[in-house]
Length: 347
Image 1 (tube, one colour):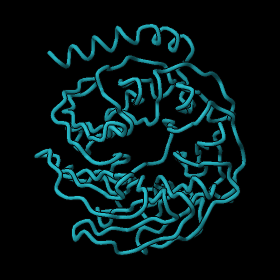
Image 2 (cartoon, helix red, strand yellow):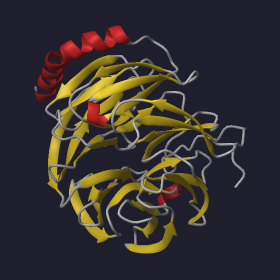
Image 3 (cartoon, helix red, strand yellow):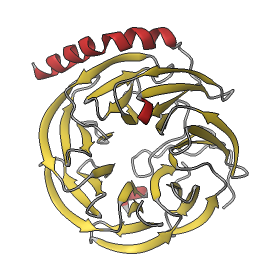
Image 4 (cartoon, one colour):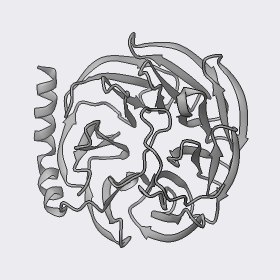
């Protein structure tokens, strides 16, 4: 009954948006979806021409987004509006929504798709939902976590989700089968992005309040390496080669390349606009797109030369970014798709 109510309430509340957004988008697989958080809007870009196509309003403050497990929808988390918006992942057209999801700042699905997790950053808690497919969500438990739960990463067996706590400088481990916090541990100043290396060997934590990524042996709960990257290390994106991961440095205006096996930095992409944040990688691994959080822009980087080759104006405080024709995202979740034959990087 609750699931049916959430679906119906979401459709009624979002019906004006549905009409405007559906009329504004076409079924084009080359759409790039960018969330303009401070403008409460979505900007659609053309992946081939790099042109800004159109912008439409969504909710109040969208930050993060991710596709549903079946790939049929792209979920936009409207943190301040307290709802989830479902977009067509190819065209950006609004499909529908779910209300009553309080403060969904960061969202994620467990690898087995049983759980949908929402980090409620302003409310200092993590909400766990049973996922029934499509737009069916059932709230199971709300877990208080002090303070400022930010990003998340799941183990491949769907037993644990790691949550970064920005204010306390810790990482928490939540056991999903029992919906309990197993432990928390200090990692450094203002942890944000968290990332699991292949086979869940090490947990990487980006310290936005510092200039480094910490490598954590999460089984022993100890830090095994500190990799200096750049000021305000923030978020991760796989290079889809099974070995390297990118981390954006929001104050240094750079992106660092990390070797997940050797646990060391092997390169930097510099000369970027202010505030590189979320990143997306084309399927051939040639082009890296990144939002510039402090510059109302999105950048396109040629991964053969590691140079910024284009800048596209969007809305205020662009955050999440997505396009369908992308390289595999995660490094620890089986099966790891084989990388394309082309090798744009020589590290």
